[in-house]
Structures are given as structure tokens and as C-alpha cells.
Amino acid sequence: MDVSIVGAGPVGLTIANLLALRGHSVEVFEKQQEAYNLPRAIHFDGEAMRVFQSTGLADDVLKGTLVGKGMLFKDASDNVLIDWSRGQEIGPMGWHESYRFHQPSVEETLANGLKQFGNVTLRRGVEVTGVSQDERSVTLTLADGSQKTSKYVVAADGTNSTLRHLLGIETEDLGFDERWVVVDALLKKPRPDLGDYSVQFCDPISPATYVRGLDNRRRWEMRWAGGKGEADRPSKDELWGMLARWITPEDADLERDAVYQFRSAIAEKWKSGRVFLAGDAAHSMPPFMGQGMCAGIRDAANLSWKLSAVLSGAKNDLLDSYANERAVNVRQFIDMTMRLGRLINQTGAGKAPSGQMKSIWPSLGEGIGMRDEIAGHLVAQPTFDGVLTDTASKHGFYVLADQDFDAEIPVYTTGKEWLREKGVFAVLVRPDGYALAHAGNLIDAKKMVRDWQELAACVPKVTYPI
Ligand SMILES: Cc1cc2nc3c(=O)[nH]c(=O)nc-3n(C[C@H](O)[C@H](O)[C@H](O)COP(=O)(O)OP(=O)(O)OC[C@H]3O[C@@H](n4cnc5c(N)ncnc54)[C@H](O)[C@@H]3O)c2cc1C
Image 1 (cartoon, helix red, strand yellow):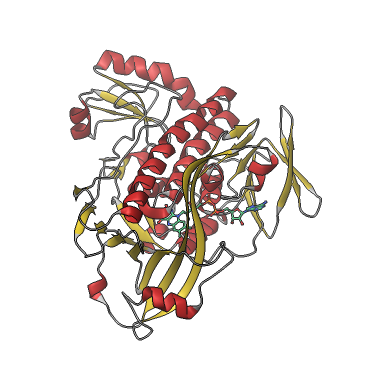
Image 2 (image 1 turned 135 degrees about the horizontal axis):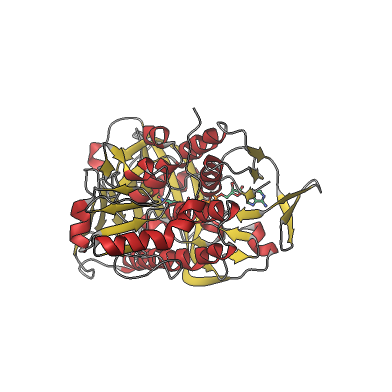
């Protein structure tokens, strides 16, 4: 077995698809029989959609989405403090900037995607209880005492990660710790007044979030002073009491609710020998920006092409770049989320900053390639001959250039507006969409390709099953 994955949440399932598409054998162990069905992610961004594109499942994922309008921050008197509107056109990623979705449906799509492959097994109802490794392989112990050995293991086993505990990896507490109740309601009659924007009700006494879901599903997240932990739940009457400012039982049925302790934390190590942490196992943040899963999907994109390259002959130390590249990037989302959390929690009327907010696209941390205002950042994804460039390249390395030239890596003469805006002649794009290097002229562009063509040749091209 090439890779064992612990956890069939969105992150484990995405990694499994991306590895299987590149021809590697994968086994996924998931302790639950059924997918998790309590309210969790409801938004993902254009970068996550770009990763779903690379799984070949974009059409199925899109079927269960709605383009997001954005988010408003309002004070207790309903004044708009901050307007974080999202474009309604296709954006630089080749997709819309923001989507609303239903997490269990996307997980089902990703799990169904795995059925296309002969080289993947998804084993539900199988808990991993132990891990050991040597220089060549990792052995997982399962709850029935049996063992499974593979070349690498990905721990995508969520915020209370078993593998992280077994490996003795500590987490750094980044300082957010609050209990919130989360409710999904199904409207029984139209309530257009609730609106299509997400709303953060900034209020030190009862901060809350409203999100328009798909069809008639609407989400409320409300800070909850009651109970002692995630196991304590408000009664139905208490829930209706909390929701009374928006809806009554005449308007909607309550579909599902959960209590979460929202925390922000990051694992101190993301790699231990041949085991890698990804997704919530490596980081957690409150959902105020809708970025927890998106961050995990970025981990999936980063780690899967590197694992694939190393399994196909690249030097093992490529894998050392994963942790720092991703940790630096995700810290910026956690930091921003916590700042928004403070605004939502602490702002009384008239005390908040006001204005327009824009999405952030932070750089990767130091890793492979250069780092500057272009290298280490996401590159726009244009089309070439009507096909999105990631797909045209079969999800390998490629070059966007102002002018065509002979090279061992595909060169697409498109995205010229982006190149001009950045002031470069060519950019070398990694399989996860980030810039590896750039060049100011044709000679430097040819050298850039020569410098990286050996690594590029190690990443197997993606072939979609028919
Ligand atoms: C209320 C709320 C709202 C959110 N909103 C958003 C949002 O809008 N946008 C966004 O991007 N993110 C959001 N998130 C975060 C998002 O839901 C998570 O980041 C995401 O689910 C993490 O995915 P994962 O695959 O890393 O982990 P999980 O989805 O937690 O999956 C881990 C899996 O591992 C399994 N597992 C654990 N231990 C073992 C073991 N020992 N053996 C076998 N299997 C094991 C578990 O059963 C589980 O299925 C939200 C979260 C919450 C709570």
C-alpha cells in the first residue's frame, strides 16, 4: 500500500481522490459507519473549488452549491459596520469567490468519487488505535488488533486526532475558546427578509451568525453561556427562545443542532517520520470566516502532489516543505478569524471600524522555490483553448507566459493580464496552483523551466477514469 489515510472527512477524502488519480494505492480508515451529519461547514472559497476541480468531481460538487453573496457585519442596532461582498462573476481562480454548500453532500460526492478507482479502499467502521514506523514504512493498528502497513500515512482524523495524540504532538493554543450552539432550520414558507448575505450580529451580549444555506435551509450560530461542554445541549424551547429574533415555529422546522467549543489551535509539528497531519488534525479555528475546511483542502492539495512526486521518484526531502508552507498560510487565516471573532463578540454600537472588507490570499511559508510578492502566492487560473489551465496541464506543473517557447513543461500563452499586472514575462505554476518561480524575460523563463523540469517530471499526470 502506498498511502493509508486515517479519517474520511472532506480532507481525507480529497487526498484519497488526488492520490488515486495519480495512480497510487490508497486505503482510508474511518471509525464511523456513516458520514458526520451535524451542522458544520456551509461555505467554501474559489481556491477550494479549484482543488475540487482537480479531483475531477467539480460538476458533482457544483450541483450542491449556491454562489455566495458575501457577509455583512452589523451592530446590535442593525447598522452595517463592515461589508464583505463577494463578486458574482467567475474570479481569478477560474471559479466564483464564494460558495454555499451542505458539507455531508460534498463528503458523499468525494466518497462516491473513490468508487471509480480499483486502487482505493474506503473502510468505514474501522478505528485506528495505534501507529509505529521505521525508515521504510508505517504500520497502523486497527481496533480489532489487525495491522496495516503502508509507505506513508496521512492523519486526517479531525480536531481530536488520535494519531496526533499517539505521536505525542502538542498543539499551540492560539487563544480562542467559546461555546456556541449551531442550528440548521428548514423554512416552511419563504422569508426573503432574512436575506442572501451571511450576517455577523456583533453584540457583546448575544453575538450570532446567520447564513443562508441551499434551498430552504438557514443556519444560525449563537454564543451560548449555558451547559458545561459539547455534550450539553439546549432544549428545543431554549433554541426557539434564542431564535425568536429571526424565526418562530410557524416559519421553520429545526433540522439539526449541535454545541461546539470553538477553539483556535495549531499542531506544533505536522510531520513525524512518514506520518503527516492534515486538516483539523493540524489546525482548528472558529467558523467566522468559513475557512476551517478550506484550509484543510489546501493541505490536501499541497501534500498530495508532493507525496505523489516522492512515490514516483522525487527526493524525499520535498515532503519536508509541506508543514511550514501550510502552517504559515493557515496561521494568517486563524489570525484574521480571531480578529473577526473579537469584533463579533465585543463590539457595541458605534465602536466598530466600518467599511469594505476584502478576501485574503496569504502566501505559503518558506518551502520549495522562491518567496516574494509572486512566488509562494496563488496564481490566477485562466483558460487556454477554452480549458482551465490546471485541467489542460493534467494537474502537473505548467508555465503561463507572454510568449510561447519550447520547454519540457507545458507553456500556455494566456493569463496575460495577470502577468502584466505582476510585471513578469512568465510564471511557473505548481500542481496546487501556487507560483514556484517567475521570470522577467524569455531567457530567464527557459532557465526557470530547466531548473524545475526534473521535479515536474516526477509528478504523474492526472488521468480521469472513464
Ligand atoms: C459549526 C461549524 C461551522 C463550520 N463552517 C465552516 C465553513 O463554513 N467553511 C469551512 O471551510 N469550514 C467550516 N467549518 C470547519 C469544517 O467543518 C472542518 O474544518 C472540516 O470538517 C475538517 O475536515 P477534516 O477532514 O480535517 O476532519 P473531520 O471532518 O473532522 O473528519 C475526521 C474524520 O476522522 C475520523 N476519525 C477520527 N479518529 C479516527 C480514528 N482513530 N480512526 C478512524 N477514523 C477516525 C472521524 O470519525 C471523522 O470522520 C465549520 C465547523 C463547524 C463546527
